[in-house]
Image (cartoon, rainbow, N blue to C red):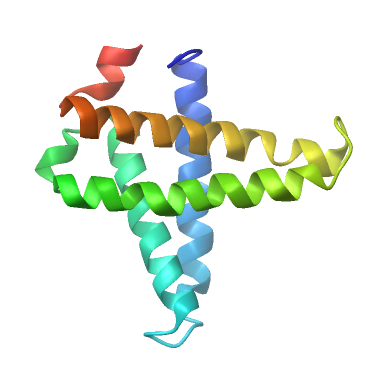
Length: 129
């Protein structure tokens, strides 16, 4: 993984925290069992896993290998949706630029979770920076 530094980690942490807050605010507005409710539940869990890793906690104290693997799907979905939305706008416009931090943060989270899955490293952030 390239360009991982403390600033990128801070930005990613802030983005993940913001996503958690937004998702939790609207999660209960959807009927339990609905696709929207399930999507948000999975997204919130993925963001909590990402936040755990970004906080440099031993992710395996909190989550199983399967939970880490399952966390990738919502993150990949966010990356895909943001990239598609960003494509609609010209480069360097306000609308285009608002997706930059989200895309880079979600890509970083995806890479870090994949590293945790592949290496089962307990101190991923410390190993990367």
